[in-house]
Every structure is written in C-alpha cells, then in structure tokens.
Image 1: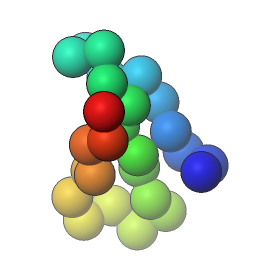
Image 2: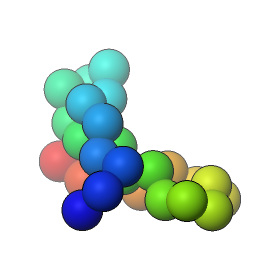
Image 3: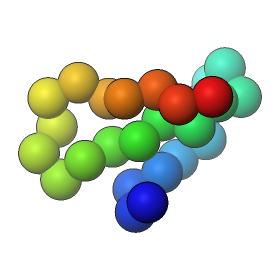
Image 4: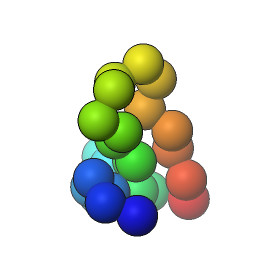
Length: 26
C-alpha cells in the first residue's frame, strides 16, 4: 500500500491520492 505513513498514535495512516478521509489501520 503506497502512501502509508506512521501516525502519531503509532498506527499507520493510509493516505490515498485523492484525500477524502485518511483511513487509519492499526
């Protein structure tokens, strides 16, 4: 999954090219 960056919670936030709502996946 591209655009996956570490979130402040320690979880990975997946940012899609079209930013609507960042999908948080732990």
